[in-house]
Amino acid sequence: MNIKSLVITIVVAFVTVWATDFLIHAVWLSATYGATKELWRPEAEMLEKMPWMLLGQFLVATAFTTIFAACVAEKRCIRCTLKYSAAIGVLGGGGQIIMYAVQPFPGSLVAKWCLGYFVQSLLLGVIVHKVYKPNATPPAYGVTLTDSTRQS
Image 1 (cartoon, rainbow, N blue to C red):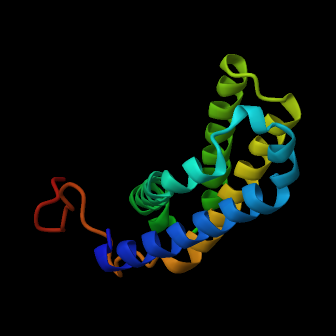
Image 2 (image 1 turned 180 degrees about the vertical axis):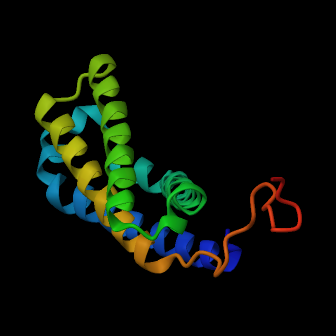
Image 3 (image 1 turned 180 degrees about the horizontal axis):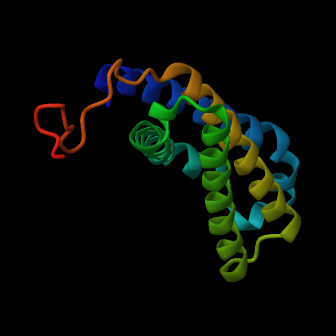
């Protein structure tokens, strides 16, 4: 794993998560949230909790990027990246569906969350794929047989 590239990519991923969360929640879903005010903290209280939101976004970016770097990046295959990203998007949507079962969220809001997280994951995957640079030579796993050690 290329640690320098990993750190840079985590920062880029964090900015991407923050920006897309802003577009999803503050722009696209703003009217929906306004119509369901009784379900949310008052705005002043949410602003007080903003450091927790940023921490959560940072952890999402870190986990997404670290798993990508460890399991997908060395293939340098955009199809593999998109499959990984789609799986993460489905995982995030599954969490929202669980929340729908236990909290009184409108089904249309949950559907929009699922769609938003799925698209966000795909975009994040493409960006991480472009930014992260694996080591030039992958580490050797196991023993490589040379002609002198190969048994007949």
